[in-house]
Amino acid sequence: MLILLDQDGVLADFERGFRDAWNLRYADQMPALGPADRKSFHLREDYPARLYDAVRSIYEAPGFYRNLLPMPGALEGARGLLEEGHDVRICTSPLTFWRHCVPEKYEWVERHLGADFLQRLIVTKDKTLVRGHVLVDDKPRIDGAEMPLWRHVIFDAPYNANAAGPRMTWRTWRETMVRVENQMSAKSHMDTRPRISVPSDRSADEGR
Ligand SMILES: [Mg+2]
Image 1 (cartoon, rainbow, N blue to C red):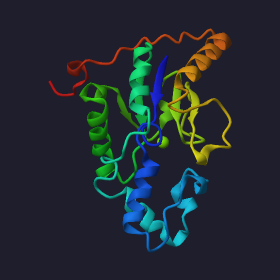
Image 2 (cartoon, helix red, strand yellow; image 1 turned 180 degrees about the horizontal axis):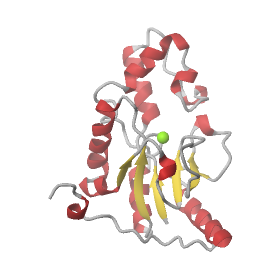
Image 3 (cartoon, rainbow, N blue to C red; image 1 turned 90 degrees about the horizontal axis):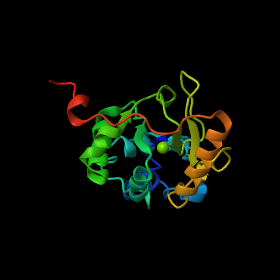
Image 4 (tube, protein in one colour; image 1 turned 90 degrees about the vertical axis):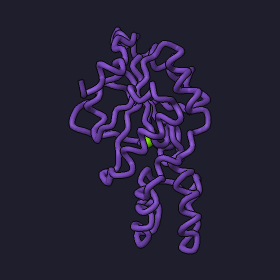
C-alpha cells in the first residue's frame, strides 16, 4: 500500500514537546495539561482562552519542531512499513506561521529517519489532495477540498478517543495494516500494491 504518515503526533512527539516547553516557561500560569486532560485536538480549546498567546508562543518558537522527540516505536515502525513492502510517505500540514515549522520539519526527518527519507516528505495544507491508500493521522477529522482517496487510520491519542474508524499505535501497526489492506481489497478489489517509486535524488530536484 501507499501509506501516508502524519508527522506530529504520529512520528514526532508534539504533545510531550509542548508539555516540557510549557512547564519551563509558563508553570507559574498553570501546569501543562497531562494526557488525561487533553480532550480536543486543538490545544487552544483545552487551555484557558487567556493563555492562547502563551500556547502559540510555545509551538511557534524557533527550535520547537526541530527538538521534538520521536514517538516511542515510531522510527522502527516507519522503517518496518518499508520493510514490509509498503511505500511510505510523510504527509504533514505546517503551521500557517511556517517560518520555523517548515524547515524544522525537514531537519527532523533528516535527523531521525535519514536524508533518504526527505524524498518521502510531503508538506501540504490539504491532505485530501494527496493520493494514497491509507493516511495514519492523530487528527480525528480531516477535511479538505476533495473526498480523500485514502482511508484514515486514526493514530491513538487521548483527544481522538471518540473518533470512529480503524486505529493504531506503534505497537499494533503490523496487525492494523494487514486488516485494513484485507478490508480494502475485499471491498473494492483495489490494487494496493505500491506502484509509485520514490523519485531519485536527481529526478526530484527542481534545479538542473
Ligand atoms: Mg498530527
